[in-house]
Image 1 (tube, rainbow, N blue to C red):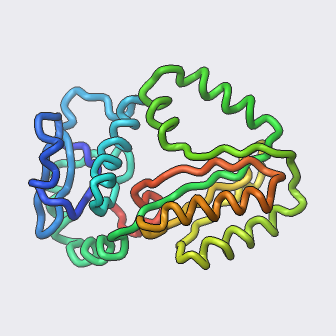
Image 2 (image 1 turned 180 degrees about the vertical axis):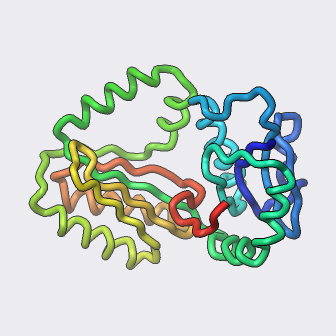
Length: 228
């Protein structure tokens, strides 16, 4: 049984930085699957979660396209090869769609209770790998007075401002929010990261009645159509 991290257009030579670590590579056609022997390792632990994100992130940061497997995907090696052969065309099309693109994230929160939740999260994570990794990926957290009245307007503005910049957008509204109102995923060109944050600052200034948490870049976790 093997644990799966991602498919990538990087070559085995490009992934030499993973050598000496407990990973191995499945070259298939023009793609490579990054995996690890399951063995006795606990991939479902907090450190296993962070390792999953970290491996994919290290490949993404080197400029390669990353199609991440869902966290916790463990399969026999022969099933992986069968999946790759069966879905060769779909994988090639998906890789082409995401080439040069990254996912950015935004959470929209009500300020009431938000600071307490963040403090509780900080206390719970402490000095764990999760705290250090996720803290490094959060780019902005703007606070202000709360209000729900203009949330529908905010959503339209998010779609208008970012779609105009060429983003694909997935907007998930929480129907019974306590502090988190919505999660938004944006698929953007890698070169447009600075533009994304500029539009994010404009949005926060235009709608100061919420808190915003922006993160990324990530592999396109929320935009994959392939079923592993």
